[in-house]
Length: 313
Image (cartoon, rainbow, N blue to C red; front, side, top):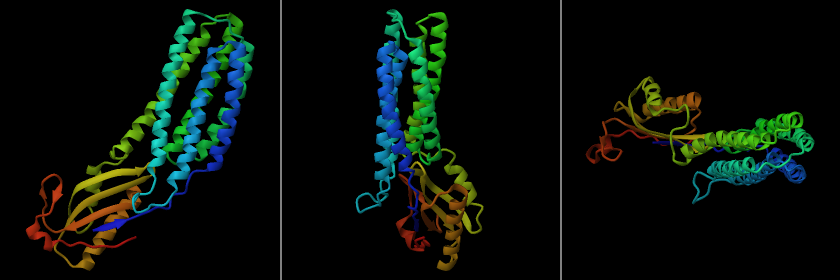
């Protein structure tokens, strides 16, 4: 059996998150003040959305710090899932705020309020520049789902703020104030769309589903092409963190010497590393068929015939 480990993941840039936190906090204050002055639900929705972004960025920053801590006796895989949990919570918070925006927009449509379009446009212009810059900074540091969720937050902000500019011009030229709550509903839909993808990905990791693009059947078929491998079964592949995958499987080989089985083992781990970027593996070599009972269990009577090799890479 072989266990291979890799914990040399470079953490995302905390500088990018700190910059994003400071800029987002300043913009929240601007949009809140301007939304009240302009009586614009779209701007107030942007302020509320950016509050969740502020919390999301703060949560991501804390998660980056936590997930870089080394493994210990009780957290043997380390804290890689801290970032996954942060992304999951961020996405749930966005879903909640999106439904609240829709609720407020429907109320505003029933009771229209005059909107100061000039203030909407100027504040939205500031938001496009700020959110666009933050999106670019986070995009360059988006190595895992945690930072990527923060990036999607900011990208959604950039697009929704650009929509506020368009809405402001339409209100300015036509006087149709229903455009403001309609834009708010559009922003809410954009928030929901961006959130569900993150929720789906993080739930798959938390439930230890197979990573996207990795199939146990396909991996088994490729490993069977290695010379000396007779069969591959009881394959389990999952994600420890968003960018750290693990695999456990049984590989049946001929009843051979320890040195020959070590050579097969090296080929198996090398193929998993180069083809699928799977560095953490637990591979059991055996030379008999397993009896399957709640998983793959080797018969006790023939257990002494198994060829098992232990090494650490």
